[in-house]
Amino acid sequence: MPFSDRFPVASRLYRKMMSTATGKWALIGTLIGIVAGLGAIALYITIEFFTTYLLIGISGFAPPRSGLVSGLSPYHYSTSAHYLYFPISLIIGGLVVAIILNKTAPEAKGHGTDAAISAFHNDGGRIRKRIPLIKTVASAITIGSGGSAGREGPTAQIAAGFGSFLSDIFHLDDHDRRIAEASGIGAGIGSIFLAPLGGAILSTEILYKRDFETEALIPSTIASVVGYSIFGYYTGYKTIFLIPTTTVIGFFHPVSLLAYLIIGLLSGLAAIFYIKTFYGVTKLFSMAKRISPYAKPAIGGAIVGVMAIFFPEVLGLGYGWVQQMLDGNLSIFGAGYLYLFLIFIVLFILKTVATSFTIGSEGSGGVFAPGLVIGAFLGAAIAIPLRVLFPFLSVDEIIIVSMISMFGGASKAPIAIIIMGTEMTGSYALFIPLMLATTISYFVSGKLSIYKSQVLDRSKSPAHEDEYKNPIMDDIPVYTAMKKDYIKISRDDTLRSAINKIRESRTKGIVVEDNGKLEGYLSIEDIPVDTDYEAKIESVMQKDPPLIESNDNLHNALNRLTKEPSGKLIVYNEGQPDVVLGTLTLSEIADAYNMEIRKIKNAQRMERG
Image (cartoon, rainbow, N blue to C red; front, side, top):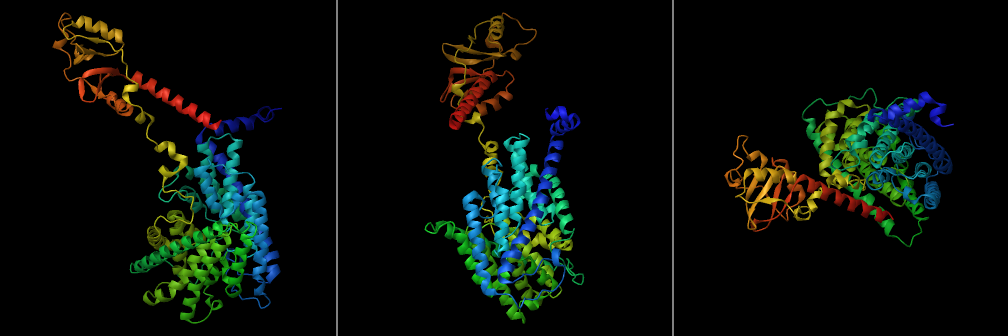
């Protein structure tokens, strides 16, 4: 029995919802949000599982946790950890990830958000159904073994992939499929970061360096709110990072704008360093053809593991280290201002390198979370000299502004990242400093982006190329569409004869021509109501007729015709305005346009085979 017969009420409700844009996107956005929230929970649990049995199980080292999980509890290094075992954990993780990806879905390598952006622009929003599951497992193993990667990429691909899947179920066209897929990107990232508003805006902004996909905003807002509600119910509706109640942050003095300007400038330079290092390492591994693809993630893991022996702060997500800095627990990094300044600079560089080798070696994971941690290490270093000049600024606000502005510049999504930064830290009082520093970082970093699949704007996206192509009529010359067997009349004929010929032509006007030479043009509007029908045409005809050159295009001809009362243009050859080649009306333009459309469609069918 068909669904409509078995559940008639549900069937009618479904048809009613899908018949309007509001109903359609409310339904699809809600379903995407449910999967985004559940996918975030699944990834969260899977990362915890692999961290327990790989990184902690092999080395005994448990990194600090974010405030969302551990609150404001101070962290102490474990005395029983075996740091020399870090490479073992990471090599095992790299080998397993390489086998999974190369055997099942090689396109799931790298950072998932970029792959989802590429699918939007180049594949009509299509993502293979297996990708979200494979990306989830591979990223969880990468992060769980100690790899420096983020969990936002997999959640973006989970929700975006489900958006693509729903598009098949609901028989959506490519345009709506792309909107559903973009909504999934925002919902996935907004859920895992507990930042629904930022996630919704991110779905519109992250696709371009200098533009927005505004149509995705409403469905993405619905999806992000639903995803946040589900993931937040599991984790608790708290922010990712907690600010101690004793710390006062906010914008209190206009002089501090100078400090934020400096932070924005340095963050923009740091974004350039992050992007160039990441893609430099990625290119290095892509060029290494002699190295087996099964070995590359293990090699990247081994390098990160060796770094971690001396600087374990480069391992994993890194949120816990940011939380410790925000808590003021700087003693775990060392003592003395000069030493701390140097150690934070080193950690800024090494976390960048570790992320580049983890993901650039064809591993799996996101670049968002590591980017925030890199920016936080930079901020901690900046805070030491900056507080000498601006003692009224707290270390926490410098760290927050630095980490948000750095990734805002690197991601080319400044507005979304600013909002997400306030949602992730609860630091809404820093909105003005974040606006200034992130905007400066955005412009300092130029057109470089950590998401290589971004395009400059909608006009550069294959998804919108038809909207920006020259109109078809721009390429059709007038002479191919004009009517050559036009009706004409002599200027010495009577107006009665002219009226009969105008009716015969089924137009509003007629060419006046003698001995092959253009004399004028007679429109029905030119003939007075009380006219003498035996009068000569010459007495009322237009001596300056509406002309168009034969090599002009139909687009220009159409524009001319919309302003020409008689609805007809006289076609002439260049340099010979008194020699008529034919006439052109809207009817000829329509015929030529339809013929060209049929040619294009036939060519497309032949290309598809």
